[in-house]
Image 1 (tube, rainbow, N blue to C red):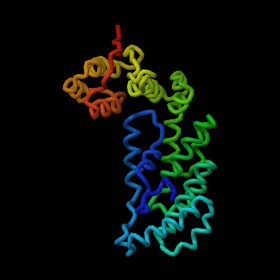
Image 2 (image 1 turned 135 degrees about the horizontal axis):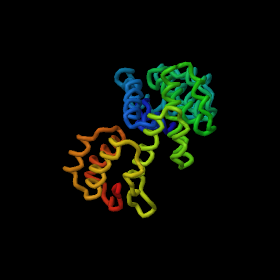
Image 3 (image 1 turned 90 degrees about the vertical axis):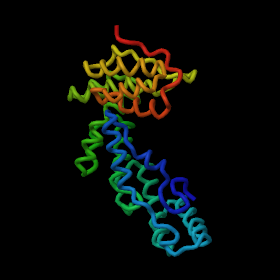
Image 4 (image 1 turned 180 degrees about the vertical axis):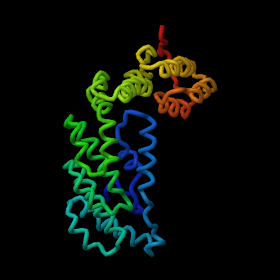
Length: 263
């Protein structure tokens, strides 16, 4: 059975996460993640398809080799409609990812997996891998084009580990957001000894981002969840959205003892 499909025929949650594109803003990331999740409609249950567990198992065993072989036409031999869709969806998704060709996304049923999320993933990855922003225009979906172009320089900066690439964006606001998020995300990436990366607030651009850093960073450093919650609630920029979310979920970030303040 393909690892992307759970026993009830629905995509596993890691597929949903996988389809969240690299973005230059945490706010955009959350919006995109939500949009993808809403497009992933739940598969019908065994009761709704009137299948008992043994029949479900037989169908899973039938489609597993078909998916592995990668022949969508072979899925026509599957008599159950839902499992036929699962078979075709898996192969189409694999082909789209392997070839970086969004035309395969059109074979998706747009119920179990949305065509839009497939195109989003393909053009985002392909543009970064080939370092070509014009690839974002391969989709006819104007919203996806803008999302891909907006996230491109951040993705490239991450790939090259060079935040200066953010400044290639002619939109100064987006370039600064890319720069700031690149640096603040370092707080979530542990070093080789397992501790979070240090952050110098002076590196950030914009008074609001620096002011947020001046209150959020020491709260994380001390592991003071109350102060952190207050600082995150009062923040003026979007730069620390993901940092706040993850830090509060973890009850503060243990080991953050090297966050430095702007002089």
